[in-house]
Image (cartoon, rainbow, N blue to C red; front, side, top):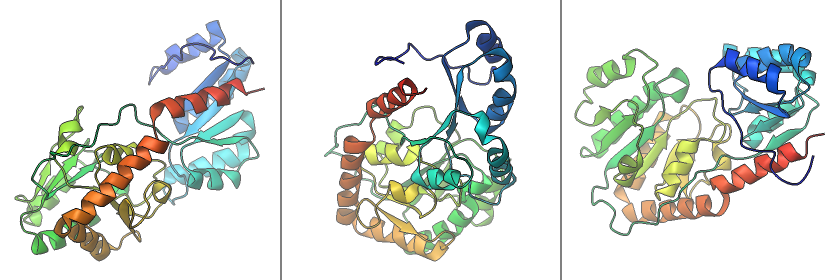
Length: 303
């Protein structure tokens, strides 16, 4: 296939019919599909209009009992042969896919474009805990609020920021009110620019219960030298090393999650040390340029 990049990738986002028309007329060398439903559609119709390589990107670990994951496993077990390969962003996803398909499965972790220099003059406010994740069931916000209530009891001046789209129709906001946490928890909705929020935070928490691959939000938190607190699910332990750059707990252990946050808030020296370790990890292993090169090498190697 040659040793250089084929050319500039074209992204169609959710414009499915425009994509199908493009495949029919331009017959691209390869189609990289992000999205399970689209992957099902294209593997059915593409053989009739093009001989393009079909590669599905799996950006989460499809190992839960959710309807989406059960459907995914069923389809891939039966129709995985219609794809030319998979790219996953966590080893946990690769191990689960290996049980379903006999195809090339390439592991390429996410990367971030820029990494900020460590700011020695970081905000003096060491009690802000930030979470960047859409409000949804799998992101675990309900359990997280129970942990927050414990933290607030021990560290009354702590402040929690939630950033992300609301997919629960105000349920989390109402729970904040019901649990008298309005003075400590603020939902800020989706924010296009998050740098300032990360810059002025002390700890990053991702309370997801399942369905994670390689969360870019964790890499972003590391890039701002924040320690990460999370449950040890799916691909998260591949990014966060417990006791080194963050704290990991058994899924659903609300008390342990709360204690971990409290521990970091009350020991800023430890928190800072962990954050610097995470910063160095991203700088060494999770930059966008490396991710792009690995994707390019993979597609050039298709035969």
